[in-house]
Image 1 (cartoon, rainbow, N blue to C red):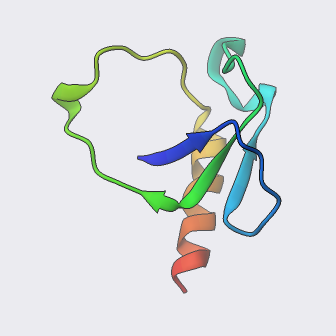
Image 2: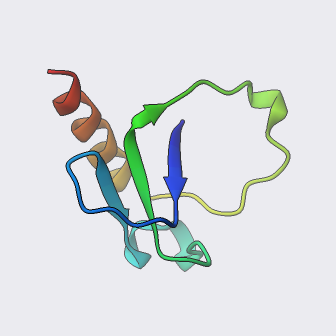
Length: 71
């Protein structure tokens, strides 16, 4: 899991989420971005609901960017 924030930053640790990155055109209510260096684990049982999801292609970009940071 990565941190999603509506506080937009323009640096190498941030990846913007666009409207077309979401499944079924169900986007977040505010313009948002992912903070690639803020990764954490979450127990699946703690998740109460799911508001939206990103497309697999966007998830691949997130993974590529995180790997690039680790190198």
